Amino acid sequence: MKPIIPKETQVPNLTSRQIEELTNIIFLPAIEVPSCDAIFVFAGTHPGHWEKPIEAYKKGYCQKLIVTGGVSPTGVKHPDWKDRNQPEADVIVSKLLESGIKQEDIVFENRSRNTLENVLLAKEVFDFSSLESLLFVCKNHAAGRQYRTLAQHIPNKISYIPFGFDAEYRGCTVSRDNWMKTEIGRARVLGEYFRILHYGKIGHILPLETEVEDLEEFSA
Image (tube, rainbow, N blue to C red; front, side):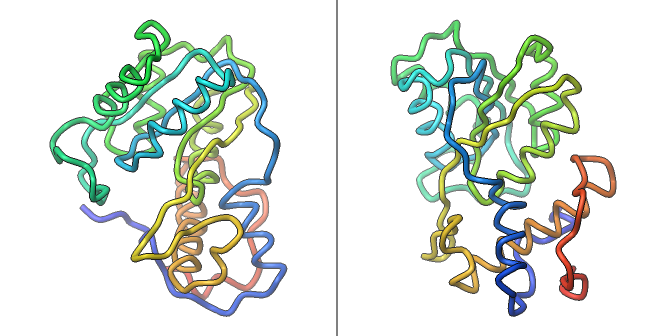
């Protein structure tokens, strides 16, 4: 089944104000990375899903890791991903262990199939009630939606800090600084924006407080 809202959408000309607002919604405002109580690893097959948690752990940003991911029925696998039927969390955890991270510092679930399930099923294996801060790993252009999923479904007040990585599509890297310079980057970011709007309206994620003006006609 394909996502209700496509990951890429029509690409309009954007004003500087729209670019600024979209950047902060999709990538979240840029901040310094502090030490946190734990790190939440969203599912995925890109090497960044284990490279960034390893980096955070080695730098002492956190000492507890929560890893998520089963087998996504819709996600496109990274070219280096070997087994299409292996749960993503199983691979991520194996990479973490190979790097020297202790087994007792890792909690994981390997049944979730999408971002919402990543969070809901993680709550079944980890108690978030004592946390005050949570670093989370995902693709940088998914940070806004992933943050809003966590914020919607973990009720206690937690500071969420993205610790992501840039992804490449058809030879174009989609980053905070250059997404607006390519058609693929704009299509991906606009797709994320409309997904945030949609999932916020149906209660899957924390809804936007304010929408970006003059983009309604480009919604799928």
